[in-house]
Amino acid sequence: MSVPGSSEHQCGLSVDLTSQSVMDGTYGTFGETPDYNWVEENAYKYGFILRFPENAGDRTGATNEPWHFRYVGKEAAKEIHDKGWILEDYIEHHGFAYNLRLN
Image 1 (cartoon, rainbow, N blue to C red):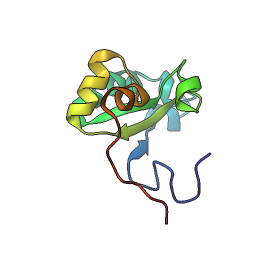
Image 2 (image 1 turned 135 degrees about the vertical axis):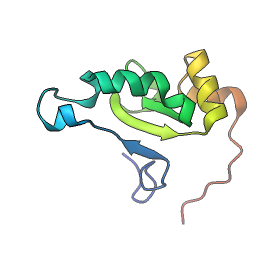
Image 3 (image 1 turned 30 degrees about the vertical axis):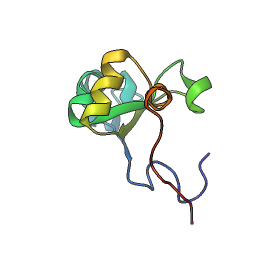
Image 4 (image 1 turned 90 degrees about the horizontal axis):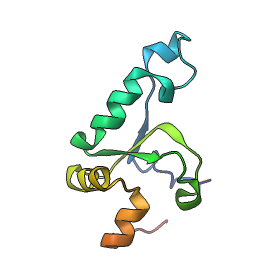
């Protein structure tokens, strides 16, 4: 759980997606839909990554959320996609140079 005011959503870094087929009840979650498959395969082209994929909870600290996509920029997203990484792998490899503070 994030400190109030510091979640990826509140910081403007992520979005939760759904589709009409979920809203209509055809599918239970976005992760089950054909729309998800397209987004998961193409999100990196627009600078987004799936933030909490399956089997990464021990590293991300969160269970699988197939609807949660985070913006990291096109260059980082492509590298994460091409190498099969999660954001934590990217940060481990490149470091984290942003000066973030909670006020």
